[in-house]
Image 1: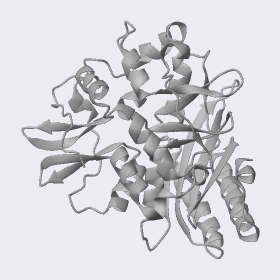
Image 2 (image 1 turned 90 degrees about the horizontal axis):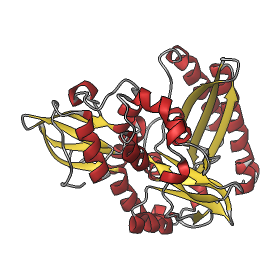
Image 3 (image 1 turned 60 degrees about the vertical axis):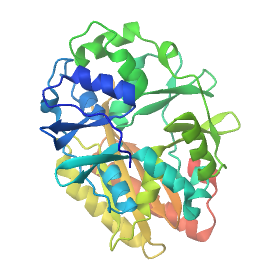
Amino acid sequence: MTSVFPVVDPEDRVSDALSKMRESGFQEIPIIENGNYIGMISYGSILRKGSVTPDTKVKNLVRNLPTVSLDTDMTKIAEYIIANNCRQLAVLNGKKIIGVVSRSGLTKVAARMKILKDIKVWEIMTTPVESVNVDGMLDDALEIMRRLDIRTVPVVGSDGAPLGVVGMKEIIDNHWKIDSKSFGDFEKSSKAQITIESVYATALMTVEWMDTLGSAVAVMEERGFSTLPVVEGKELVGILTEYDIVELISACRERDSLFVQISGLDEDDKFYAGAMYADIEAEMMKVSKIYKPESLTLHVSRYNDDGGRKKYSLTAKLYIRGTTINMKEVGWDLVKANNDLMKKMGREVIEMKDSKVTFRKRKK
């Protein structure tokens, strides 16, 4: 927990909150009214709501995230952060905020834990990873962030080798440089005005896929990075983020049943959530006869092809026996794509039983 953090008033403007985000590095800032905590303003919420203007009042964007107390278990905090895809949570004593706990704080603790620090990077990294070309536009990175609900995207050269990253800092620093009235206006004009090459962070640090979690976090802490591209030689093979590490902490939580988190569903798609959970439950019941699954996170993104039809991209991460299984599936039918993804996950677990799965197999 840190007791030093920025706050905003409900009557403050979004531009005031963005300035404090830029100065502090916080992406969720507590909103305080008459000394009492009432919620958070989140950069992710601003990003997803295209009609927000610099003069919009903070009170119109209150996000009711879970709060914690001084004695909340670390794995429970991690579960809250994963379930709500946020970076900071408020620590309360009654209605008063006394501190903020963040992904970076949990990450530093994880790196000192004997049970976690020797885990290999490839076991928890996200793969496959989407990237943007250095010749692209900032809007390309923004679209990936919106679609995948992430905050950092690797930047690669023409040979596919990582050159740097573009993240929320770059978005925040450049959003209001354009004479625009809203985020929607920014989207329309940014392609012609802001290139990735002109704004991305070039102080690149990478980790090898065989490095340990402890050594990777040491690099993050020393450089103040929340994201590290993962390479094998010069090839970009994954990405390690604080979110991945917090997912690992959450997976360590003792539960009576499997923790499942589905994110990214639009209002139109939430109708299918019941069928998706049913297919997940059916496949995980089969998996549990081989190994006990610890947690499963699944993110849904959708986009329109050239013909205007919706296509779904599903990415899943299953923690089992201290190992991470990453899977991806793309399809026109959300429920079928989810079902196909779960079946692929089940087959991968069977492979784990029959032989030790190498990184190369998982990457395919």
